[in-house]
Length: 135
Image 1: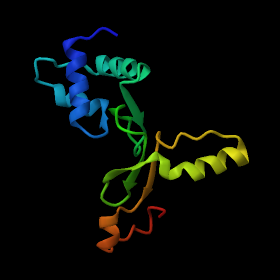
Image 2 (image 1 turned 135 degrees about the horizontal axis):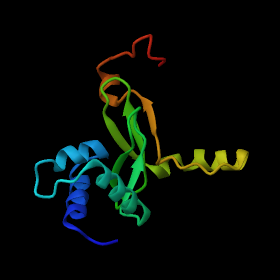
Image 3 (image 1 turned 180 degrees about the horizontal axis):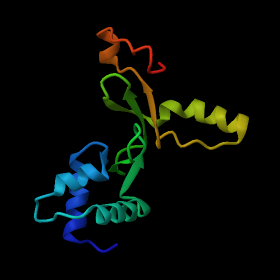
Image 4 (image 1 turned 90 degrees about the vertical axis):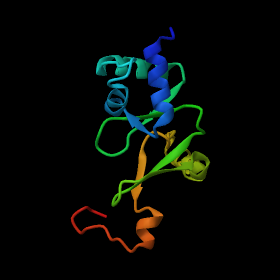
């Protein structure tokens, strides 16, 4: 992969942000000397993922979010109430992944999606999910 100023700027923007979407990366770079259009960002993200520089996950109903691949594999925990996203080492799900593989033959990638619930702060604050959100 050829290193260009735009790709370097994009990688730096991913490094600065936590779980950035392509659109938020375009906005972050907008107005800079290395501004890039949305299609260039998507193509670059795809290429960076193919060579192992970044990973993506699906958080919420929007598009995928991207983070630097040097982070250890982790599970994304997203609060249904405040929207906070936190991480948990993927090894915490090792027993679940092993049982799933043993019983079904399915090899799960727990790092690709989020587990939804209430974050510790919302639990402590006594926030309750509304009755119409299915929680």
